Structures are given as C-alpha cells and as structure tokens.
Image (cartoon, rainbow, N blue to C red):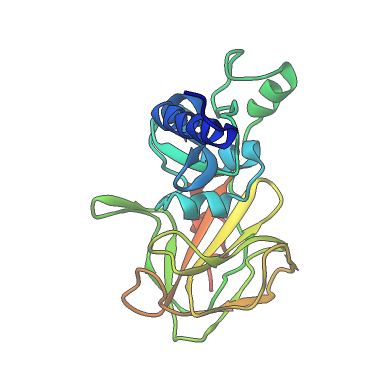
Amino acid sequence: MIFPNWILKSIGLLLLVFFLSGCQGSLAPHRQSRGVGVTHVVQAGQTPYRIARTYGMDVERLIRVNKIDDPARVPVGTRLWIPGAYRVLYVSSKSSGKRNAPNKKSAHKKTKKKRPPVKNYLRWPVKGTLTSTFGKRGARNHEGIDIGASRGTPIYAAQSGKVVFSDWGPTGYGLMIIIKHNHHLTTVYAHNSKNWVRKNAWVKRGQKIASVGKTGRATGPHLHFEVRNDTHPRNPLKYLPSKR
C-alpha cells in the first residue's frame, strides 16, 4: 500500500517526538520545564559571585532563582540552575594552585593578602542602639550587627561606592541594599522599609540610601548591617568609630 506524502511526514514527526522524549536527559538537558539553562554543580571554593560572573549573569538573579538563603555558604555539591546558559562552564575556585588557576596571572592575584580592618574607615549607617553583635548567636553565626531604630529612621552609606543591589534580598533579609567600595569591601543594609537609591548608582559617604524597617525575618524595626571582604563576613565594629 502506498501512503500519501502528508501521512508519511506525520508519521516521521511522531517518531521524532517519541525519540527526543526518550533521550531528553542526554540530548537536551538544558531544555527543561524551566526553559533554556544548565545545572551547575558547586565545587570546592566556588561562590555564587564567581559562578554568576563566569556565566555572565547578575548574582542577585542567581540567588533569587535558586532561593539561596546565605550566598556566603553554599555547600559543595549544590545544584544551581543557570537560566539562559547552553553549556556548563569552568568556574575558578578560591583555592590557589595550578589545577584551579587558569594562568599564572590569576594565581598571583589570589595570593594577595586582604586589606586588614581599618578603624574609622566606615561611618555608622544609622542612629540607634546596638542590639546584636557579630559572631555566634545561638546555633548560627550572625554575620553582621543589628542596630535598633524607629521605623523610617534614615540609613546612610557607610562609605562611598557603587550600589550593586537594591531590591528584595534572599530569604530573611527583606528589602536590602549592597554597596561595593574600594579595598574589596562590601556593605549590606537589610530589613529596610524603603530604598532611596537604585542599582548601579554611585553614592557618597553619609548619603541617605534607605529607611529603617522590619521587612524580611525581623521582629521589630532595625538595620541589619554587614561588612564583607570579598564574600567573607567581617566584624563591622572593627571598621566603625567607637562612638556613634
């Protein structure tokens, strides 16, 4: 029996669909229900910041898509979804050595010592009462300090720099701002009621950037303030003046 061409084409398309469905795991792993993308498995020394930079995406989007609670502590083996990527890329780690360093120049940069804390380098970001310090708090580490203040109290930039994030942060942080400064330092301002500056804005030391609130995981209005050297949390009191 001879079938018309349109019937033969239809049968061929059906066979192709069944074939691709059966081989989806190996032939097209990036075309899942979430759209185009790949799954990156976190290796030792890799951080969300390095992973996002390698794939050419904003770190805040990577954090939001994967619902990362603490960007500074992503366990090895965690599977991160990289939307828009078509293949898994090599991501350098924080550790030194020929195996992890693509070239001698990058390896040299990794061996540079971090700038030690400089007292008075930052100014107090808000007028209020210190209610929680840096370090152990129960079973978890508190990676910043909490400053209690009335809702709407102005929050100021602790130092001049570029706003790299101004939006709703990871779980618990609420409305937050992240500012990048010189010397590999970054400051974080969380639980805000309102942000007054946008991403990519340049701000001056002492400029109003937000207002105190209790968004996110907060029992009352206060500012959660962090200082990070690259991605490593540091005690803010070592950078701030002794008197508020």
